[in-house]
Image 1 (cartoon, rainbow, N blue to C red):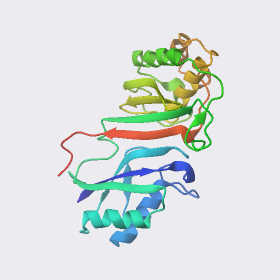
Image 2: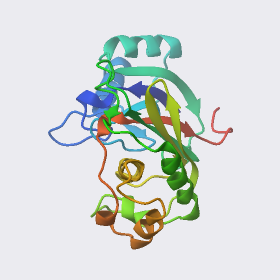
Image 3: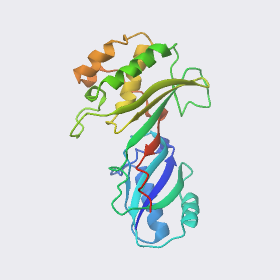
Image 4: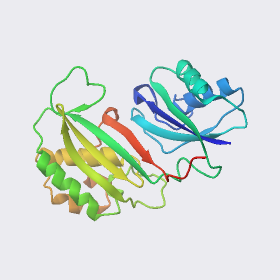
Length: 247
């Protein structure tokens, strides 16, 4: 049987989602927990990779097993077994050919920017001391919808077949002393969201004109875009799948 597991995690202590040599990752910790509790080796495949320090309020992964289990009991045991910074939210059966990564229709991220000094969110937001022009940043966000190729925001030397992404949502929202950049697309390039946010912060600070974003995107050159904001302000928040994947 194939199962989906829905989880959330605070990424501060981890070198991202995907298993790496000589570095602790979320995937490794969850795989070990499932393998221990089910009594057989379990391999899981996530819906995507998050970089070191990035968080997820929702991520899905799939695993295969013939071992029977009581779902509520397994969720309870996993949450007792796992460290406090990883939480299992649900486990459910899916069709045998459903893939957590390749069947995802969209993914959404939120980047949190603190615009007021707050000692309680220093590990969860990127604090910008200077005033930001949110109207300009939202004007820049609208420009993203005019393009498909976002190579200028991609980490260099990354192994991808295409730099095209379909942006479905991109906007800045003001929430309780923070600015939240919400972006949704069918796929994302490595470091893409953090590079977009850094570029838009430069626009909000008046260092770059809104219309310059057209030139930056057309350049397909990472060095033309803005700085990459720190990982601790980035959250994977939502992944959509076809409605008929469950058994």
